Image 1 (tube, rainbow, N blue to C red):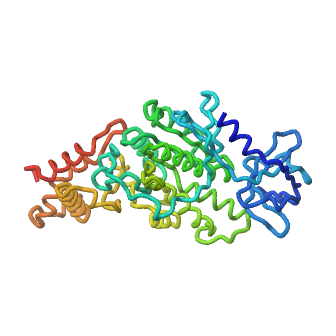
Image 2 (cartoon, rainbow, N blue to C red; image 1 turned 90 degrees about the vertical axis):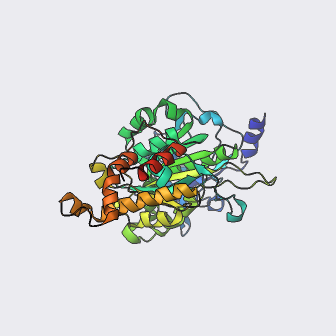
Amino acid sequence: MKSLVAAVERLDPLTVSGRVAAVNGLLIEARGGLTRLAVGARAEIVRLGEKPLSAEVVGFRDTRALLMPFGPVEGVAPGAEIRIEPLGSAVRPTKAWLGRVIDAFGNPVDGKGPLGQGVAAYPLRAPPPSAHARARVGERLDLGVRAMNVFTTCCRGQRLGVFAGSGVGKSVLLSMLAKNADCDAVVVGLIGERGREVREFIEETLGEEGLKRAVVVVATSDEPALKRRQAAYMTLAVSEYLRDQGLEVLCLMDSVTRFAMAQREIGLAAGEPPTTKGYTPTVFTELPKLLERAGPGPIRPDGTTAGPITGLFTVLVDGDDHNEPIADAVRGILDGHIVMERGIAERGRFPAINVLKSISRTMPGCQLPHERRAVTEARRSLSAYANMEELIRIGAYRAGSDPQVDRAIALIPALEAFLGQDKDEATSLEDTFGALTQIVESEAA
């Protein structure tokens, strides 16, 4: 009955329509019905011999509205009717969505039948919680990945970026986190992924166990920019629903860069001026709006706190340049960054995380004193070895010249083995710190 009442309340007694005035590339200009339109409003365009085409208002030009479609524009004719839906887009998730794969509209794409719809509507483009109305980050989170547990210790409700070039192992790292992290639910957003890799990620990389507690949102690279952008909003909307149910949520998004590219396409089509590397100004305004939605939950009126959304967002660095515009902007928004390097992957150590260039902004406060000492000693040894690595490899370093380098040379084999981890292997937070402490205090050192 509640669902029926909610459906009746959503009905709009007034039907407004417009007409197609022009089609320029992927941009459709509409006339009529502008008093009921706003940026972000949805519409359906009637096509000749085709299903109606969904579109979204992205701007205005003089007396016309500018719409971008969610599909191909074939069949759109001049004067075609446009049925306007003035209300913004929303989704009605339930806990039954766990274990399912959906698209940017919340439709199932896994062939397991229809999805149930919840009572409460969650807007896809919800504002982040107020800074003064949200809790602080919680206790540290066991991610199950040794390199991250000790060198970039993450707290519940923290947001980290994973920065890497293509083919360095981001997707495998995300699958390890989805399977091993100590949380109640996982929401995975595959934004602009290769179509070939989606089933591979779900069935092999994520696996049946990982999928049981996960909702996977998919928008492949061949889909329109609006769908790729909306898939990112859908990922956060589902995460917010699960958070409001009191669950501790891990939100994984691969990748923020493809979200930014989709927003760039939309902005350029709407007439925005290009800036650095062609990215439009709205790219840099949408990024914090998206990323800030993750984090500690808001404080309810009764004083309780909703569950946190711990976010890990991958950034596909262009040409392995970690200072390119999107990487630079995201690094300034998030609470830490994890750098993956091709050179480490080429040596055969996975995950290919450069711990010296990675940082968590909740450290060292989230570590115990003896844990901090072990991490500091390990970092010092890794740094000393990195500074002299070329001389050591060619045999130009003479043993005894520097006690710190000598100690680093003795520790490096054990540290490298510690940092390497098979994708099906998991190590608890306590065992990870115990293993690191044993290495730095070993007699061989």
